[in-house]
Picture 1: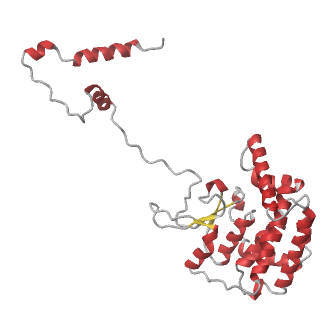
Picture 2 (picture 1 turned 45 degrees about the vertical axis):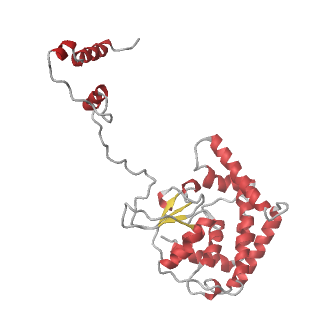
Picture 3 (picture 1 turned 180 degrees about the vertical axis):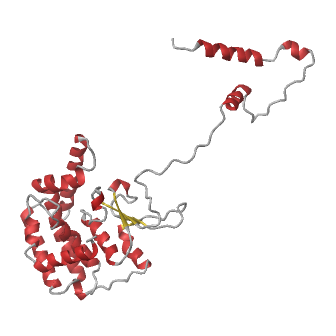
Length: 312
């Protein structure tokens, strides 16, 4: 039944040849040395003698592992296409910190990634450069990036009058409208969110369908934390109020609060205005895009940052 009889016969013959005979013991032949309790049994030892253990070299790193150990690597949601390697992220949370690092002159290389690759379960995170490949640096999550920039020589930003209130307009009004705009508007989800977050995640239709449901469900749950009901028109109305207030705040200045260089607040707003006005994204329901385009100084603010920090 498929057993190699030749191999079986050879093994039997070898065992007989190595078995000590009774006559040899009686004739006064020299006895084999006694084995210790830690010694391998003789049959097993013969196997290892014939097939010695081999130490293979270490496997090479997977393709997604950082190859540029001497550079700062920022892991973000980003197109996998080579021409987009240093382009702005299509995710507001990632783009905010990508822009902030660029504003402070931090040299970095971006790496397209996803939440499953993050040590905190969300993007972005930074893997700082290291000169010793055997001692990789610890990853830095988003909530520690501002402090890390200061440790690298970046200037600590002063808190401006009423900045907290204006920040709330971005973090609440714009973000809530954005969640509805991208995930819960059926047309925009299919034309923009699907190719950015779903299509690139898997080729399986079942996986894509499940992921799409998860994304839309998470956006709905997030909105229900601050809204009794989800009313798209009301969310868009609050976003337009935020654009109006932010436009008044910027005025004729190049950057917010009269600064000569952009700061974290500029990055926070740019994270939304860049994506909303991105010509590469197809918005079937362009409500936010049309609302933003009414405020020319905000449009120019976005264009100024693109030219200054993302033109390459």
